Amino acid sequence: MSYSPKLAAALSGATLRQLAHWRNARTGRGAVLVPEVSPVRPVLYSFRDLIALRTV
Image (cartoon, rainbow, N blue to C red; front, side, top):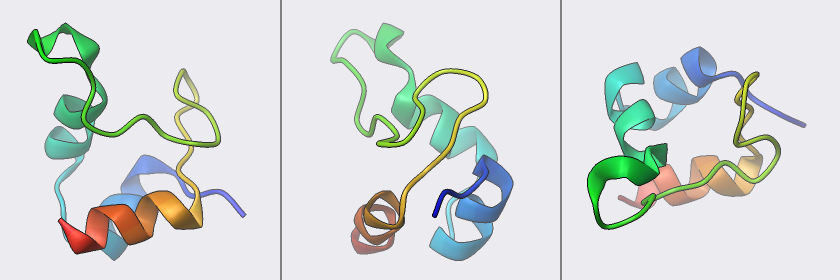
């Protein structure tokens, strides 16, 4: 099952802007969380991604 960024944000407690920042590799340090299902548009998060987001 895959989750859209809007649903992933609601389920994880993060904002859409935080999710976008964490998957952005241009921050100099690399991406914090690359979505497992689809890292490019359309971005889709997996259940394991949501678990990782909740633990943060």
